[in-house]
Image 1: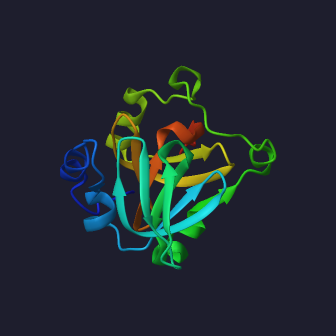
Image 2: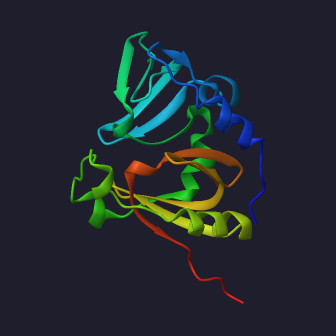
Length: 176
């Protein structure tokens, strides 16, 4: 069973503010310990001092270099120091990884998970498997979701999964 580690509804509302200016994202500044580990199509990016615009994210890496990432290139994120807690719940599907898939810009061409399915999985506290376009398989529970992001609990840690990076979504059958 999955538990709700913090008040995600308020967090979602706070992170919906958008403007032309770079804004501090409450998800990455208040709720996630920094640096935040971003899993992208090109690898791992560990960033601190994170600010966002609607389609971009920027931060500072360990060498104090300013890094900018298009949000379409981000698959999932969590606090870097929580890697040991997250790792047991993340596997690699080599057949998907071998395809070397890239981000899909057209939302109509992306894999979509019906909100009703996500709502039911959340209510039932079902374990789910998500496969990203890079072959990462995450096993955990949906805590909250919005149009762009899934908040997924992997063990004791909440991971932010960007919906545009999904390849597959399944709810494994429960043994009686």
